[in-house]
Length: 252
Ligand code: IPE
Ligand code: IPE
Ligand code: MG
Image 1 (spheres, helix red, strand yellow):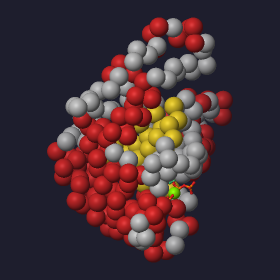
Image 2: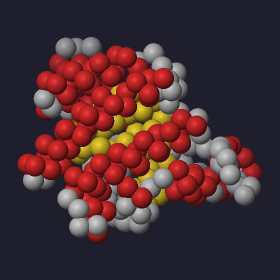
Image 3: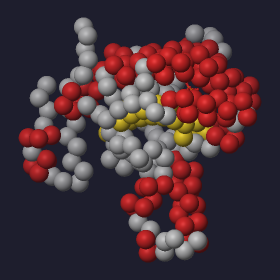
């Protein structure tokens, strides 16, 4: 029933999603895991669309972790293929919807073809003012922090800063997506309650939402449910509930 802007006053600015359960979705249907990944793309498209319509500022999706290389070679290569074809088929529509796309992770591990496509997509959409859609590929939270440390170490080596300048605020400047609002809502499908090396630094104060649904079964209605759940959280950031007071209270 045109359920837009659920609890608008308590809407997350930045949603991050661990899209898990594609393999199990396929297995339940006696289908190959790749069929699950394809069905997962459909769910992804619906959720991106819903975020555009709900005027969510940032959506960060975990598409391939630095640990997913450990999967059977055939699954990895079909995921790469799917990634490439999906980028090719979707980018124009996303561009038309004014979506700005960025990729986080170690993209240098990918084929030249895929790296070029990633670059083109980022360049094409860089000035768009709508949803900022970050795709985490070959991403690992520990890599992200180590990468930040390396950049900081280089600054120290070159004399631009000293070790005394190193603090949480500085580290934060060098980790992925830190120029954007911090993640407000983390969603993981598939029933497991873990982070799996996603944005471990950035999730410090994120609200964590877990659902047993498998990713291909996730849709706009389920997203609305997560948004309603989020709207009912009282985020205290270390303060007491009284300090937060009425301002952050929910009116359902
Ligand atoms: C998530 O679904 C997609 C990727 C990790 C690429 P899975 O493939 O992990 O699905 P399950 O967890 O095996 O069901
Ligand atoms: C997390 O899912 C990574 C992605 C969704 C891309 P996994 O299926 O790889 O996580 P684990 O192995 O169950 O922790
Ligand atoms: Mg999984």
